[in-house]
Amino acid sequence: MAVDVTTDGLPAWLDPVAGAARSVRPQQLSRFLPPESGAGRQSAVLILFGEGERGPELLLMERAGTLRSHAGQPSFPGGALDPEDGDQATTGPLRAALREAEEETGLDPRGVQLFGVLPRLYIPVSSFVVTPVLGWWRAPSPVGVVDPAETARVFTVPVADLTDPENRATAVHPSGHSGPAFLVESALVWGFTAGVIDRIVHYAGWERPWDRARQVPLDWRA
Image: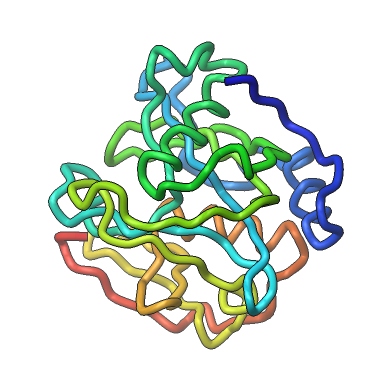
C-alpha cells in the first residue's frame, strides 16, 4: 500500500495542528523519549481527526480489559510495526498506523489522508517506541469493534469536549506519577493518550484555562 503525507485540501481548522507537527520538538511533547540505545518495540498510533455532528472530533477506542498491556484504557488506534509495514525509519509507521486502525476499528484506510507525523515518544511501562501519525478522515467509513479480544469499544470525541475546562483534570497514579486527563464519553482518558492530546490542544492554540489542581485518583491496576 502506497502511503504519503500531504496537507493538500486539509480543512482550515486543522492548519494549526499541521503547523505544530512541523515545528514541535520531542521534549515539548513528553519527558519520556526513546532510549538512545535504540531499545524498545517500534509502534505507531493513528491520531485521526474527522467532522461530526458537533464539529471537529477525534477517533478513540477502549482497549479490551484482558490485554497484557494498557488493558481497559482509552487509546488511539495503533500497535506494533510488523515486518510487512516496511522501513521503521520512513513509511513503516505510516502503514502500521493505518493497518492497526483498520484491524481494531474497521475503518477504511482509503478514506484517511495522512497530514503529519509527530516525533517518536516512549512508553516506559510497555517499552513501546511510538510514532504518532496525524490523519484527516476525509471520507468517513463505519467503525466499531472488530475483535472483542482487542477492543472493548470504538468512539469519537468532539474536540469541543476535549477543550472544555469542565472535562479536564490531573490523573494521579499511586506510584506518584501525574499527568493530564480528560473525562469524556463516559471514559477517563489518561496516560500516553491524554498526554499527546494535551500537547496537541496546547500547540494548536485550542487550549482553554483549566483547573490543574482538580485531581482524579487512579488505582494500582491502572
